[in-house]
Image (tube, rainbow, N blue to C red):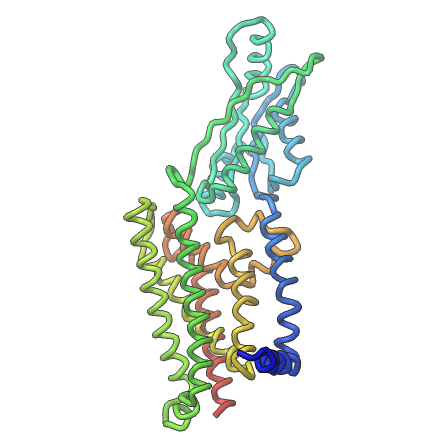
Length: 386
């Protein structure tokens, strides 16, 4: 092997990259993009979890221990107190209203202080001062535990606030216990939260990557140009690809779900066919996206560059591995423009909460619109090529 010939080949490759400005920019900007999005995504913690507080506490000799706990919760940004319902809302059943909000997934938890909370807390504190056994005051938490990270954050923040509150000249902490009522997620583990995300992620990666690779291959071999000379319409080509790759995504999701149920005893509370339909719609949409992007690439290098640009934000910002509440504020709006976000949320709601089409219709509608728009744009790009 001669070094001069080897170096000549290297110069040839580098010259081709130099003249392809998009590829050169990709090689420089992609590492910066990756470290930035990984750093911000992994560096985030759960924040601004929406909760309701029902404060029916009547106080004890002018002392409102519940207000002390609430004020401490407000001083930090872990929980976002959407509303505080008090005794004046008793006729409207504030506890039932708050639990209903949890059941509709509008909030993650309803925190309830009963009428005797301060009296119980002060009585327990007096017992401790006297050296007697104390029965702690209790706080009820009606919680959606489908996301273990969020549920843990809510409980930990409330415990921290309780342990921070001090009463009396000696700054004693009154004994307070938390009583949890899990509206959703009873007995659920992290794998139950994780499995729907993996199903959506696998479907997205397979359909998106296969569509790009297949389209580039057929362009390179001339198969696509020959196909466009036949009476087959652009819509038929795109829909044929969509049906095939959507089926591949469906089969893969079925394998993942079967393995999760058999090996890890994943809970499936709702209609599994509905969850698989959500994944199928995601696969069709991403096939169209891959087809569209690759059709606008001049060569194989440019087509492949679209993969990390689409995949990394979807993996990190769509709620697959951690909740959207852990995504930094300035990146969170991006999550709502990622179709995988709606597929994962819909599949989780079906599998863990047991919801039906009546509850996940919005996620399904978003995925249908995404698939329809991508297929129409893909067909239009093929028509231009013809």
